[in-house]
Length: 128
Image (cartoon, rainbow, N blue to C red; front, top):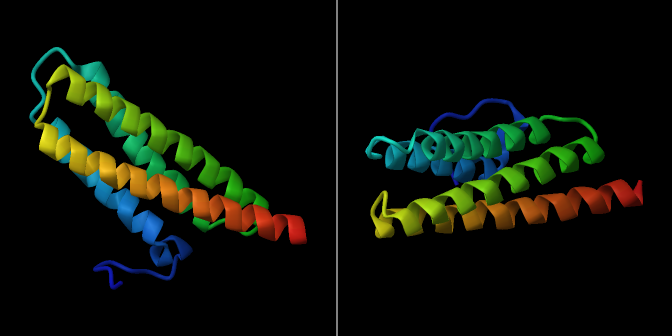
């Protein structure tokens, strides 16, 4: 998969990073049209999506498998938080159900990729 902005940093080689970037962009776009009175939920889902992407980036650029795994675990937790906030948004009817479901599928995909990264780096750490 070719990505438009690639650098020499390790996170650019991870599909999980690019999917998390799309998740963050999707959440940003979704929340721009929120009705007044829901700023706490809007801020929370934005922070969780952004933290998912940032922790993937940080983990990918760490040296040891243990450090990588620890950041990916945090990213997975943030991704789960993002999904829960999206479910709340859907249940409250704050945005189109179709749009939310697409973003939640993306969050699920990111979570699955992170599970794979965590397992891979934990296995590497145990074999060292």
